[in-house]
Amino acid sequence: MASVADNLAAIRGRLASAVERAGRKASDVELLAVSKTFPVEVLQEAVDAGQTLFGENKVQELLAKQPALPSRLRWHVIGHLQSNKVRKILPIVEAIHSVHSLDLAKDINRIGGELGLYPKVYLEVNVAAESTKFGFKPQGLKEQLDALYALDRLEVQGLMCIPPFSADAEDSRRYFAQLRALRDELEKQGGAPLPKLSMGMSHDFEVAVAEGSTIVRVGSAIFGGR
Image (cartoon, rainbow, N blue to C red; front, side, top):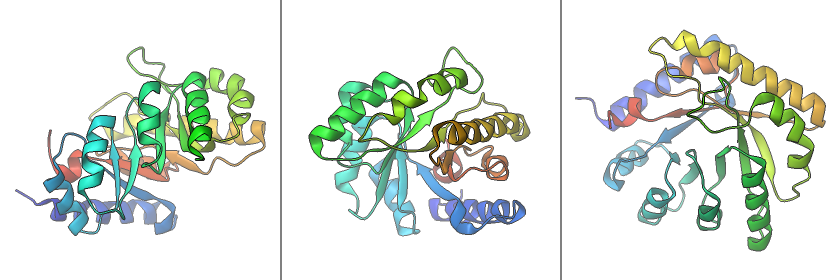
């Protein structure tokens, strides 16, 4: 059975190849290690192998792990976030990938102001209009863009999506292309850059890189099955 370090090396190699095939620079795409459900000891193996950027789905897990690991690590929230958890995580995370509604954005903006912070966020888009997933509908996001940009504490980095799962990575391509096209539209509409696209997971990150992803969220391919 491959170690976490071996898995990380393999993923980094595949990511570098995907970036090269896409004609992009290595610095264009970050690898975020999705560490949900794995204990601190396993995360430490990834840290020892040079990984510094981690993503957690659950606030309680993040709050438990963050103090037990080196302070130099960077943490992102990538799972569904409830408003009543925002205050706990804003001081310790670099970014939130799962801002799924204007109401949540308003809460993050207000609490950011109370804490003297400028939260970095990604707007989650429900690209396939799945009833089981959170996120802005593309048209709804266009209609609410001005209201989002009026929130003076938020630093909107870009967009995030989770396409419907398919064993065939190519099935995700159209959703990644959709998100990139939506980002381009919103940049024109809002007159502000949205440089980041959080898209691609263990099974489809190479396709995501080809379609413009700037941060891929890889968990099982690094840490193994849950």
